[in-house]
Image 1 (cartoon, rainbow, N blue to C red):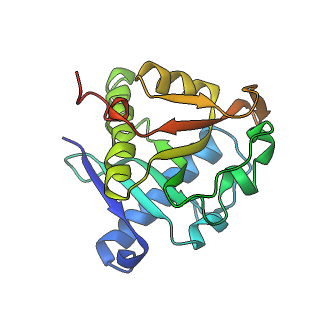
Image 2 (spheres, one colour):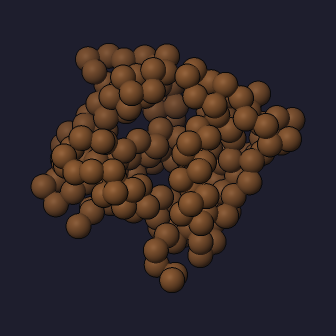
Length: 197
């Protein structure tokens, strides 16, 4: 059983959430620094950036032993966000959205080693975490998401049946060691992974 929790700025001071957030920033460090080799700032093993100061919402996923196995961050496009302010070249000529009903997904991370299980299970976790995009959207009146991701992650989203398109002229670009794209995701029944078949 997977437990999805949404942590918003108003409950970050809660001690239980403080520990969960620390675990989340540590997982982000493992994934983005160690596994993907991105140039991210790491402090005491924790990965944080300027967007974490903007009161984002964090979505975490834990297993039945309360170990964190995945997370992502949601930011409204009405303020600064990664695609617009860090990777505008990935827009490929498209205007970045600024709309309270459109959010950016960033820092999507899944642990590979917390459960010691094989990749087939990990893909189930990926589907569960992607399904939380839908739940979060419904609760927050979100109609669309944008995100910067790797071509490999794009393939997974496509495989899961997510309604999406590449932004601008659709060409991928090299970012670090990965080919990356900016995606526009539609919030529809297809995003409610595994619940509509």
